[in-house]
Length: 358
Image 1 (cartoon, rainbow, N blue to C red):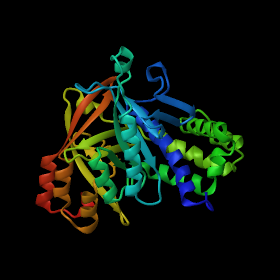
Image 2 (image 1 turned 180 degrees about the vertical axis):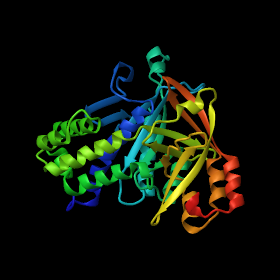
Image 3 (image 1 turned 90 degrees about the horizontal axis):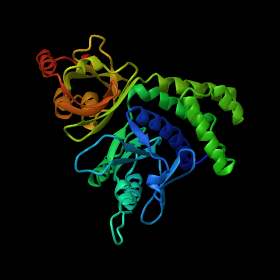
Image 4 (image 1 turned 90 degrees about the vertical axis):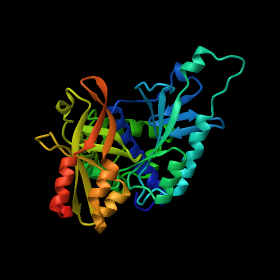
């Protein structure tokens, strides 16, 4: 909240942002890690939205700990260890460095004494790190993350999540202080975050939330709007490019499942609009008559080419030639390839169209 130091303010924004990300990841088919017999001694949760995993040297709080339910040959079941930051600036190298230590400590907490038991094998996971940043990454931070196998996902100029970010900023700036978040100790934070998530899921009104925590009625209205914006997102999927960049696509319309009825690939077009000094990139499927838009934050080189007059078409082809993703369609997890429409791309080259019309 205004008047607090930047560290405390970033903590509040991060707590709200990670709740949004958890809901989106659950909708994408990931399962939140919770304590249970299978994870005895490895996972604990003393309060809502505060999951801790045990490392070799101690317990570590993980913002977005998820199990991936899909099967990948030769790998133990995959567990996502996600870190979320909502800073006013780009994530710096020091944040990545801290996360590397946490990730390594958890990954190395497997021991065998005299024999390998069934429970040990069942509880084994392949922990993978991912870092989610509301406002992107410093280049040095991205290089350090890459060197240690950590995937980075930016939402810096993703139009589909812009309103969500704005409401989180409003809530933090005007209504929710770090003291409010934890004023009653662990129980207070647990209650606060549980009810915050209930509003986002439409299970509680913002007015009720404001009343419960002695906030102004306008805070409840802002929270209602945040929940509305989140529930407007009807499509969200993660996809990896051939150049190794992980992108999160978000859209307010349903995914065009009909394009994948008989095959596992479809062609797409990657476009953008310029709004001031921001590029807003989105993907549309070539066979989609409705031209539904799925927004994403592009790789830096593609964004810079659009802003500063580089060869946008070449950058699109380099990064977006093939996107690999997995999406649940009619209850089945499908592995899909989304390929850049080469006919469309070549037509744009021949016409030498201006960037605004891409």
